[in-house]
Length: 259
Image (cartoon, rainbow, N blue to C red; front, top):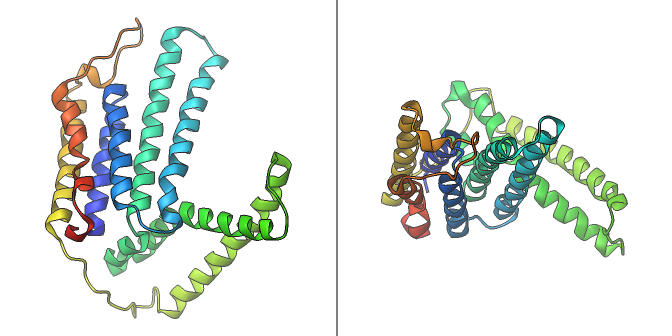
């Protein structure tokens, strides 16, 4: 899969989530994200990114809803906060899917030389979750081999401190390797270009289409994108817009060999 195709898909899915708080549009998007993740997740700790960001999404929704209880509490306010939290949670899920199916350093290779430093920072940011997951798994396995069991909250420092140390060591190793390869000195090596396969074109196309449709409807102030919570009413949804969301599942139907 061409990295730009995944960027277009994730951007489009993110625009869909950003444009609405309607659960009839957001919940299908979660299912679509899981479907794409299941079909194209990469081997290794990267595959766990979806699960981690799903948990973060649920926590974000819970925290956003809980904040209401510091002010006026009624059904309208709680529902509004829950829908806002759902939107944030779905954005995290989309990011988790993107993180699990693409190589951040593949994106780095596409950056022009003048934008290589910002692209490197973005690639490192995208790799934080998988690298942390990998480090945590390694440290936990080492601790278990020593007969140490992480079963209580008080045992977390035994896991967190080595994970942080491992992360710092890996960051130093990465910086040294980039320096050895001439990063920033104009001697960066050329990489084999990615091919735009039909699957890549289709993936980018559905992302651009879905994002553009929802962005246009949001600019037009389509009422069902932001359900009314005061007075509290049951949210309505347009079937054709739900279909646009489902369209984002197309990459999951394409075989990896076609991407």
